[in-house]
Image 1 (spheres, rainbow, N blue to C red):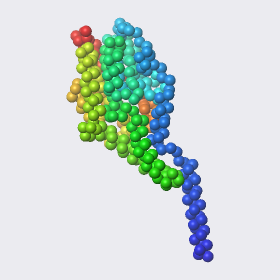
Image 2 (cartoon, helix red, strand yellow):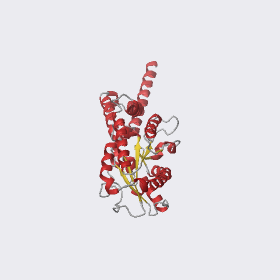
Image 3 (tube, rainbow, N blue to C red):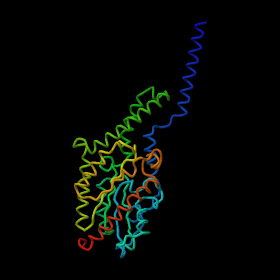
Image 4 (cartoon, one colour):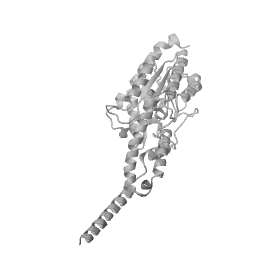
Length: 330
């Protein structure tokens, strides 16, 4: 009788474990870091409208129309508006519309903003854009939108996660439990998620505050921004900096506050008029600002928020350039 009960108990336990495994197989989906890469690659397939410079913007008349002012807005995929299909929903164009509908007194014909954001770019590529457009577009103001990733050696988020994904994938391929048990997969994927998030944060911080070999890109970015500022200043054109935070954990303590402070300190020391977008995003639920649950590029609502906050900053800068123009610009 005792053995029969033990047998029934073991059978019941086996059925229970099998049921849990079946449920786990139903619930399991590919790890989030793999879906993030795939979704961001999908957003790159949108047919964005571009001009003759292969930038995401309309065609402009050359030279600048009388009574108008021009802004060259440099940046990466956040400025470009990756994942937002319509140009009119991207913050450079939203700001341009606002300045056209209510033009500054010194720009009665409005302000034209060239969206020169390049997906997957770093400051080296921004200099190339500046070199190609400085004479043709002839801006009155340069605005550099600096996403925190732009001072790291990773040209894109997928590039960063490719490396981590490979590390995780190798470990999982070598695990027989991961290959055959979906219950184990669910547990392991949760642990991997924490590991990847920790690695992401640590590598970001190291790119700004680490050893010399880790901060090479940040040092290069500093030099490139100063070169851009000097070349623009020689033409009588001011250069401003916008700090765009990583859209995660937008509460105190913000995990990348130290990085934001480092960029702000650089800007202050070198005389860049600066706008920090982090306070405008703080307190928000970050996933509501993303293109998708697995693509942290800002969505249309986030672009609208950015435009609303930056428009007064840009308007003030345009007024400043007008005051300086007669004395400095050739």
